[in-house]
Length: 163
Length: 102
Image (cartoon, rainbow over all chains, first blue to last red):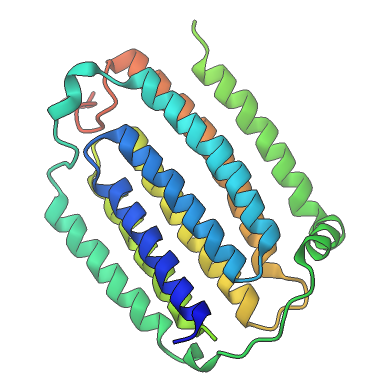
């Protein structure tokens, strides 16, 4: 067991534990904080996968933007009396079966065929590569995503303002 | 060296946890959090493939950038909708929001 494999197992266990708290946690603020830990765990896994730029983007956007937005929404829509309410609805058994079936299918697919890949070449510095790719080959999706963000911003403001 | 299917299995576990959360949680914001979990699992898969498969343009990482962007836009709009829901129904539990006749 090399050091890298040990670090991977540690990060994987941390991320899965945090995701379990997100999905099963009774207190929704605790679930949001566990979501922050999940995002940080995934960012650490990106660093392990030589995707440093994406790890930084993940922390900036997900932790710094989306979870703050989620916490705002939680604080604006919470009720003090719902501390002891149920968090899981009536379709627990069915969705547990569905999720377990999906997991079995995905693990089966993950262990077929490409399991032999283990010695990849080292990637060049990704930031410069990504910047060049986003402005040359992927310029159209880049611009379209900018328009999407504009539309989402305007839509969110219109939907959320007080009438 | 870490074999590729370790990352794929981790992505699968995170994704099915997200599916379970999106199907069972009552709070609408918790459902949105489970959806973010699913998107993260998919991004992890893409970046694992970008690392382990020979890709001339790092397509996996570019796709992951777009996934992060779209997840941000979707979270913003989704939470605006949840706020509107709270204003009209005074609750964010999705099984209490029912305008159907039966």
